[in-house]
Image 1 (cartoon, rainbow, N blue to C red):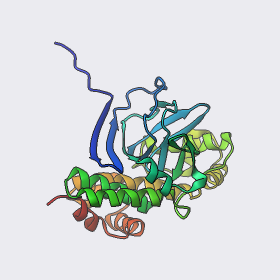
Image 2: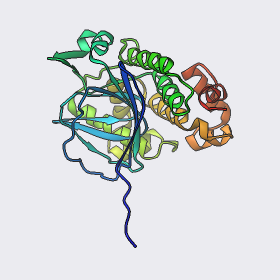
Image 3: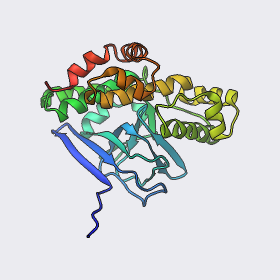
Image 4: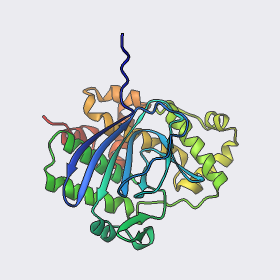
Length: 282
């Protein structure tokens, strides 16, 4: 029998207007080692919402997961690796050049001729930005959001992601950043597991005390809260697939439905049931 191979990437354009192009990009993640060099044709804001991968840019690397927005500058070469199996998916936004220059704080970008580029590889986003990613993606995939609404949500998302109140730019040494990256990959390898500090420290071969201190310094939030945000971001992705929220709670690693609901409401300002009604087409 002939063999059939699925493509490594699946790209679905959800919206294309004069001011923004929004795409849902999935990758099988079948290659653990670094890929060949790639580059974007336009500057992109990439919001991972499922899975994890590592983007390599020169000697720097960034772990791409749901707590971050990554910046892919036009014509800037990079490589990608997938040290954790399972693939990944991201919502990608390309904003028109004039609008991007208006939205982005001056200290975050520079202009190279007609092209706007970001100075950093990534910024951390907050739960409200994660919720906007989910609302935008579900709204367009389910044909709930009209173009005007989707454009407005996209611009609000960009403002939220780049705003000084919600982002954290890490200025750690390379060694500390690499340690934190290893922790992120450990958590991503089994998101629902109820990890202990001892477990994580054993995986990365470090001290539990030092680990918690470094993680707080680099990411700007405690390790336990970082893991909680990963689980809640996963909930945003799959909420529409579950009728039984107790089952979802258990699958995400929460101790109970009430624990999950309380954490979800605190992060996103509404209950899981309320959020599901807003993104699932009835």
